[in-house]
Length: 202
Image (tube, rainbow, N blue to C red):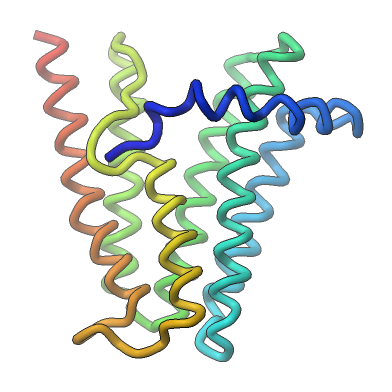
């Protein structure tokens, strides 16, 4: 289900955006910071969306912008030939905080903190296993049931729909079920990546 396999396709569409970033003098790290600030804005909007469901639509737009800029920063670094370990570290740290603030915002908005904890741990363990494989000498692992691109797409689509579908679906709202998916599938993806890495190390 992972969308990461389509990175090469997305890279071909990034040219105009990379050019625009260069025109206004943005560095790759600057783009990473802007992407993170958009994620923070999305988390805040989701946290208060119970007061106005249309805010879910606003949050969806912010999440899609975050995801797109997360592609632009890497492409810009390659275009400017300034890719570095420090930039990669900054990007990953900001991505993890972005994941946290978005999921916490979703949980706060529906007052489902236990679901939020289960979801955020699943997401963080998925990301951890992806980079830990690299730390032990393997390639970085992007595969599994639910990568970051998949998560952002699901958040954007689900919350966009939640702006107009406000009735509960059984015991949970649409956003609540989204957190369930992240909790269950996130941990399954982490296990998948762990198993792949252990097999590769044998």
